[in-house]
Length: 417
Ligand SMILES: Cc1ncc(COP(=O)(O)O)c(C=O)c1O
Image 1 (spheres, protein in one colour):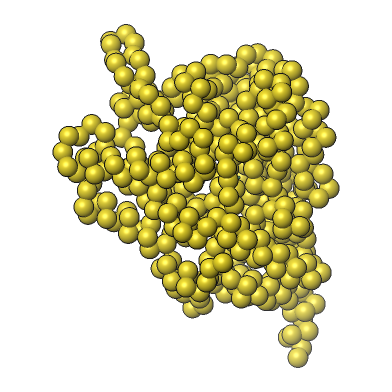
Image 2 (image 1 turned 60 degrees about the vertical axis):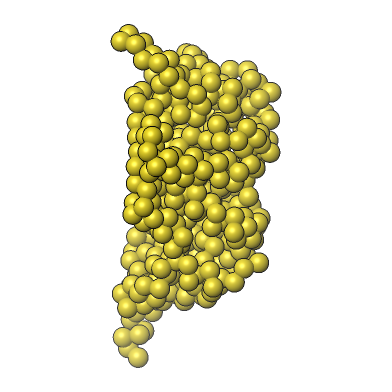
């Protein structure tokens, strides 16, 4: 394993105070903090070899191109891309990656009456792009439900994926509940000749992901949730499918030959990268990959699993707390969504903030799931590789404090004493 106290020193922000208290950052599913190595990589690029890539024939352009393409190769290695870097398309974020598939694949291959199978626990970014393309093409959306413990209903998955299914798109690890059987879903999809899209926003940063082993056709994720910068995301795709689709965006870089009336396309992956890309952040994503590989993704996973287990254990001891999703930490990443009695999650979050504790409160961009869980919102603590058991103790202590603060009887008793 690794020493968390030593590792924390890599993250400058973790030494700051919030409202006079040491920061306890438990909003990692929204975005993670960045180690010095990633921040340095950004600064180093801008201070030493800032230049546009691919087309320049001078030293700076060469260095920038090499670093950017080197980063792509690192990402390919990180997810064990069977056909290497040509499958790795840089986008702005996971959302854009999913929109790319919905638009480029959907526009070319979807027809009226075709079915797209999703689930009720999808993030809006794996929902709205499919709604848009389904409307345009007259395709039909189908939704797999969850069971009483928040697990995806595999029986329904088996039922819903049928001969009319063209696309199955599921989140690998939910940002609210647990991990989904996407490998099995890919098998079911392929048996029907459908493609399998995986939203890896919460899995790639938190567990070893071998994209060949997952058996999917597309995998989307964001750099900023894996210790990398904002503004850079990834769409991994099978080359034969990427070749068959038409481009998503048109412009410079993505072309081979341009005539006035028509054009031909660049090779993969540049066919899907129109215009000047996010060079600095692309390079810094490579630094994030180096950083995570230095720790080892098995270790990241093991650490988060033990944090989640500890948090669930301690929080379950509070009678007012309801935790959503399967309780076995094997079935989730370091995400614990919960409610505390009838305290609104926003109020809870504000009270915790006064103690320097950052959690998330709201619908987590999963409004249909909130409705399904019969709540308007939840609080959510989410952990990353630098979080500690002591921070979870602080969270639990703060939750108890919030319980007393919002409990009118306890408040009255406190006034009397
Ligand atoms: C499961 C899941 N999918 C997709 C996204 C979208 O990521 P981004 O906003 O970086 O595009 C998120 C972000 O929270 C997420 O948790």
